Image (cartoon, rainbow, N blue to C red; front, side):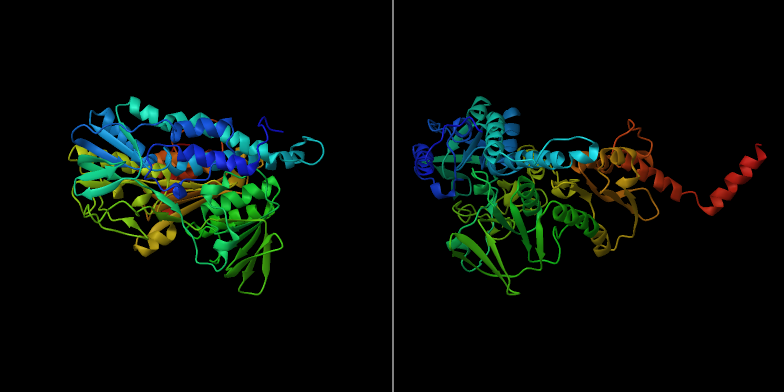
Length: 532
């Protein structure tokens, strides 16, 4: 049971719309705002931070050193960093402070994933000699209430008031360039020396006949669910699709995961994707790869997905997770002489400069790597290059990423196919977690570590790690790559025993053994005979 007072869903939705409509900037397209349901105490607290109903835009005073459009991760880091260094900064947001990550992305999804892991652990407790008694049941409204409570608790860090207190002029409304050095918002004009476009991306769609009429969830609406769908069809087996398919299967939904390609997680190492496929099937997800969706229709309260092979899949809800589309619409980019396209977003060079020398961009709006941490570090480059004549380059970043399935896949640097495409010879060292004591003791032996080295050396070019906490563990390898530390040096780093991260030290030991050639071994044997 939850602590919420039951509210009629229609009245609740109406109240949410009225709460947003009451905001002062009337030029905002309300259809672009994520659906806010239910309007309980947690969502009210969250909204008051990220979309305050009583907000009054400040009066622009003079020329800004930096005007930032978009208050997601890239925009917030740019604005706070620039203001902290003494710049006069304006920040414009038409939706919700915090962007996708806080509101409809990383924060709510990882809250759900944690609950789903608890479900799986409880069901598997018998293998550890622990009896939980009876079937494990999920109170889905309570799961979602926990997510809303945690999101609300985190939201003050991204709030409009916090940034105002930093000295940033925060404007809520639609931003539109009116020239190469001016932006209009809420009937006011802001002049700037430098600007940063950080408007992010939204859920991409597909031209499937009947999809619009049948209706579907995206990451922007998924976290407003209050009832667990009995049957969930997930279209797209990328990171979002795989994470949510596994989570909802663990909650008890009957989940079908549809992927047009021949495998899930098409960009990942094939062996790693195979381990995740096995984990999804273990948790009850029905995988349909190479699936061609012909049409979707409603029938008797159900949504029917018709495939090219003649089969049909029934679902109560459909989750669309087929990637992201950049938010370039309505920004007046032509007036600013900023080049862009609808597919890849704003065009930037390696220093994040657009075709307007005074305008930069950062985050999902211009990057193929649509990760919060990528947006964070791109924003740091903007601060250096825009305000202090820096020459920092995006290509110099060593960027790890992680898909938060169970087990997780974490990766950094080159894949084997990347090295092959670039003509870089490599040596690959692979170790199974089944050979790591802590993984055996934890019952988490289904993963592995694969490290790619420049051939004949210990220089790390890339690595893929499959483990329950791979996202935590990959940073050791990332640090080694950033610091130019070779794998033989990594082998000298002592880990407390026992930890699963010992797989990384073992990889270093494996490399060191490759240096013991037959000739070197004979020399050692001769030396040791002489010293007897």
